[in-house]
Length: 460
Ligand SMILES: *Cc1c(COP(=O)(O)O)cnc(C)c1O
Image (tube, rainbow, N blue to C red; front, top):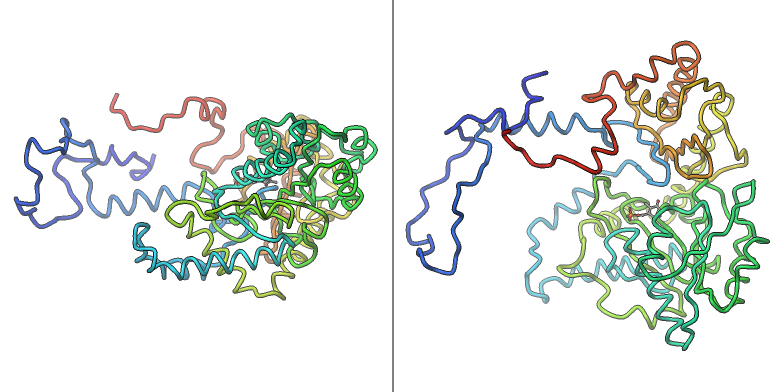
């Protein structure tokens, strides 16, 4: 173990300190007996020098993998490079305080107004609310809007929502939280929603349908106009999951496809660094029909997750209309390039042209090498793994989303490594079973790590 792999508490020595403050004037301490409750035991903090602290955090940051350290093709997550100009723009607001008087925050309000217009133009929606702080939060908000719409018309029997079997897991979960019953519609062998299977599900109890287009397999639902006609025809509404909207940017608009309500993940499509649980922003856009239900305010307390909104704003303005359009095309090109370059070594269950992402079903010549082994081995070569074992339609799913921000050289080196791993799988499978060999830890018990995490330092 290297010295700085120790916990910061293990580096601690009594009395050591990395700063000195002027003595606090006596008068500013609250009187004993005042309403302030004093801590009874001293706060247990590590006592370390400034270099210890700097090295501790710098070393920690390098034990992790991020978009700033390497290619991160995690499917259904849009791990794109986030331009640093966004951070400069955010830094301009460093002096802003969440409690400052409203009349001094008109600039912030005008950025929300701009984003409302920009996102409406990009998506073909009428207006957005910026209340939701994540994609799933947006889904719940959108579904509640759909319920409100039906209730306002005295249509209380509409308690079911249709979700395809390829949907992102948050879709059925949000529907359940909203009190809706989920009805699953099957995909056809070509990965698209089976319209013939959809028809018999439609009726007076259907609140609507939730769709991702392109869907989670990276395929564009070509029958969307027909689907919209059928769902509207039975009195239902269409919800669009726009978390990963990259391929559509400047090409097609959900509003034009017939969707009534949608969310965007600004922390995916619009370039805010994400992972580790936030902060995020999942604004919900609605078409004409749902505008009256949007209500006010449309920004959550303390100006919402304003940093995320601002980064998205900087991203849209930096690209401009013409280049926003390029984002969609390049993300599609990059995904198809990888797919075509690897399909001789990895099983490609759906061979058609994909949009921003696609799914392999493990190695062609797998032997006893699993998708998990491939994912772990990639780390040894400095690449983050794609999404694995999702969607559930295939047993060895490897879902790859390169995004539009990677160079041809990066894509080529990823392809080379994936081919090398395929060769290793037949020549030396043991090497893959034991991977990663170069990471700070190899294969943790993932269930225990999720269910019984140890998050607090304890001496014993
Ligand atoms: C990421 C994602 C979500 C959920 O977004 P969160 O911000 O993580 O709640 C929903 N749908 C799709 C398709 C996604 O990729």
